[in-house]
Length: 81
Image 1 (cartoon, rainbow, N blue to C red):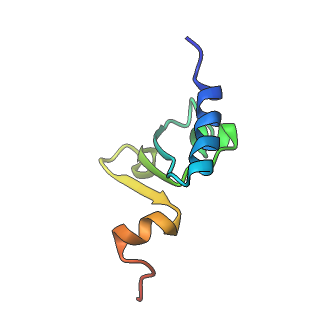
Image 2: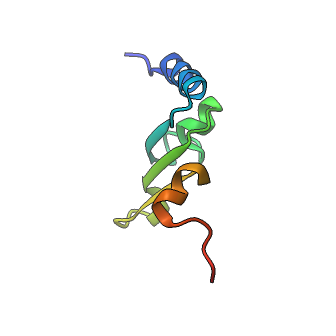
């Protein structure tokens, strides 16, 4: 079975056209994918992405990253330290 590269590219085009968020859930393994994961491999920028494993060097931690347009509603916007 081939990876769904054409599907992911078309999905990015459709979500941009309709103003929908494209969300990736990536488990980056330094042996399989480049540091940017599938997004870096295909030059697709997701609006939000979740990452596991590699950010914690195998420890149970995850990261959610993305555009402020979407994440500000979750984390309260710009933080003041």
